[in-house]
Amino acid sequence: MTTTTTTDLYSDDPQWVDVTPIPQYDGINPVAPILYTDEYKDATDYFRGVLKSGEKSERVLELTERVIRMNPAHYTAWQYRYQTILALGTPLDEEITLMNDIAMDHLKTYQVWHHRRLILTQTKQAAQELAFLVKVLGLDNKNYHTWAYRQWILSHFSDDDLWRHELEFVDSMLRDDIRNNSAWHHRFFVLFEAGVRAGDEDREALARQEILYSKERISLAPNNASAWNYLRGVLDRSGTEYSSLAGFVEPYAGLPGPTASDADTIDTENPAPQPGARLPSVAALEFMADVYEKQGGERLADARKLWTSLAREHDTIRQKYWEYRSTAAGKL
Image (tube, rainbow, N blue to C red; front, side, top):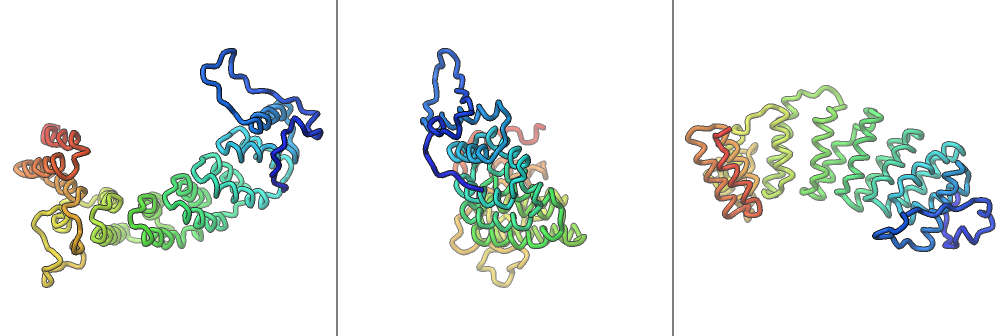
């Protein structure tokens, strides 16, 4: 497939003389007309022309590529390109090669990934696509569209071979950036949302494993909200009481509990905060307040004390929320 590099106008190209361009209609007196470049206006005028005639040809592929490179969010150009590819029987590996280049330049454009999805449903080369996504995530490791596309591939093809190394992959992402909330979400997706593919692991054993995994990562970065949210997700999914982790969380909230200096009492399943950690952790304070609130009775006073400390000192940006929590506690 030949890619376009020319900046000449189609209106000056004798090969396009048979196409009647259709200008964009902005109304009689547009309030805020968009000032398109001459090149974009020319290309889209001719695109509307071929759209009306229904032409599907190699030159239409060249035209849609030019429109897309100037405006990668032009969903009509993407859709018509896909229809043209199918009509012409264009080699899909060539299309993927071209789309690799465009994807690298427009990672945050939804239409780029939707087009790849359509092509992949035809090629079914899922393993090759996962390898490409490793490169993409190397450029932007938190790109929502890329992670969502990866999860679609895993779910759509439902191939055990695709899942086999997924946990290893997400582990490497978290080693590179422990605060990568997208990688944390993907870990939960792999283990809980989509189910473990490599055999029927004991669900309780899996929960214990992931609780310990979360604790270890929290000990490295106590103020990493992603690890705390993951821990809550595991507890909720497994039906584990938050209060069962009070002994682990208390030191992170600045409450009485084991410290790194208590060498004789260190619990390997409850790693203490690292020396020099910035404490108390907002997430730990919230966690313990939730524990006290659920226990009710006299512990509500302890919960309110923690919410007050969050509102006035540790998380003032959410002051109104913490004040609401304190006022609403025990009334619902």
